Length: 270
Image 1 (tube, rainbow, N blue to C red):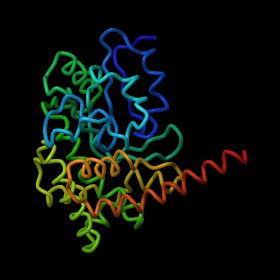
Image 2 (cartoon, helix red, strand yellow):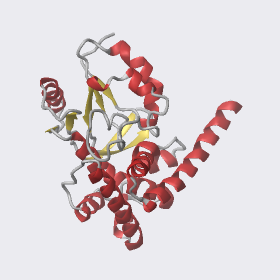
Image 3 (cartoon, helix red, strand yellow):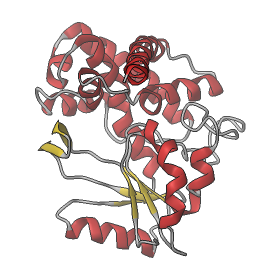
Image 4 (tube, rainbow, N blue to C red):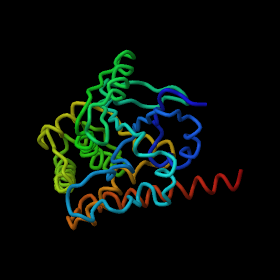
């Protein structure tokens, strides 16, 4: 039945499967806080920046059939960025590594009463939750590192610190991030942290495996479209070349296809 707040914290590629169940939870004013890595399916809602046609059509990498948008109205959405690092030790057993930041923001940029209410609820739970007037720029700030570090980690098996400290991989990471920054800025995003500082922040996380590498090692489908694929799609729409991101995405997409085929084979056998 109806609840006060929905926190949608499944992987981005799992949203379409659960979206049809969400309307049963909605009351007249129930907000949906979206907590996924990368950029969300609602990114272009009400955003009037960049080339006129860049965000006119839905993002097909994230919601190709329109199922998500049909069941999660943009008016209900509050964006959220999850900064903590953690790993899944066993089903239902998540181990927290570091971090407690969950900034939130309305798609419109307004600081609304419901945004304040959600922020207070998170703070009462012991978390930090800034109320932002530009949640999209904050999403880019985290996605900026993830679109480079996550696929690189799958290709190399490297940890955050390991990839950042090794010169050749650091160069590739920086190249991908420069490409992403060009795309984000063309769409109105503001990168409040310099690239080298963002790399240093990732390195400071230490010998931690990215969520994508954890999924790969566990044989789970990886969250690549929201982290990398959508950036490639946006770049094509606005005509900005992203050769490094494209290459990382292509390699990890092929690996992901192998995981999906293995899962399908296992399902048919069982």
